[in-house]
Image (cartoon, rainbow, N blue to C red; front, side, top):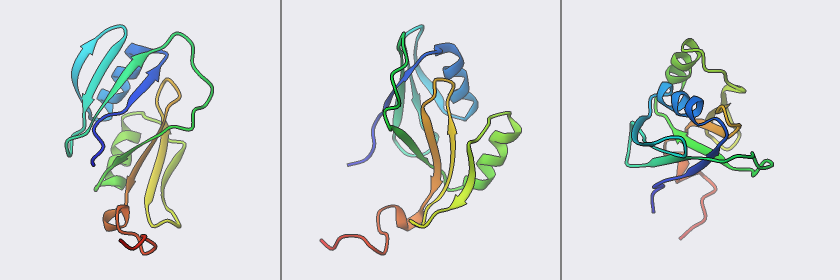
Length: 126
């Protein structure tokens, strides 16, 4: 099963749509002021934004976008004015990750894991 879609709650629809467009995602459905859907530049995954009136407390949701060119992409986004809460870091679980938040406070992790994404050394045997 592949990731198909995630829907994120957003409190500032227009600003959040512009944010994801600036990150390089393709807007494929635009129904302001309540709903937008984006296509990822690689693979088949999509994600949506849905307006909410009141932000909910932290839900613990983190949206992961895999980037084979992680460091270059982060440099590009930094140059475009996008702020990161954590720059690319090699993690103990063998992923390289960078983190940022969108204008509605959703946590985004840009990462590269290569073969370790699905086949880490500690993978459970079939």
